[in-house]
Length: 100
Image (cartoon, rainbow, N blue to C red; front, top):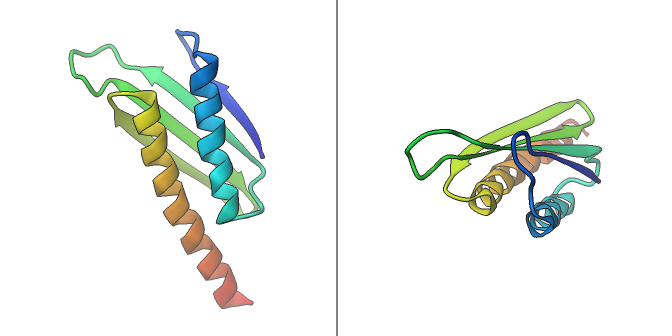
């Protein structure tokens, strides 16, 4: 799976990008037909602590899955997004099995 990380307005450290790629690669256990993942990392200019937004667009045959989470850190947001995508991929796989 190809992972494309976009960080408008700041430069992400290599460690963060590696973390994201590692987490997303785990999704392939649940669904092998993932084409690519677009990851958008944004920092909101607010006084709140949860000012990091992680948005992941997962491209799979039959439509894309999009998840957006806000958290204190990008790592935390990535974990939440991956958990949500994991659930969606499992549901998608079950639906496909039902039609076979």
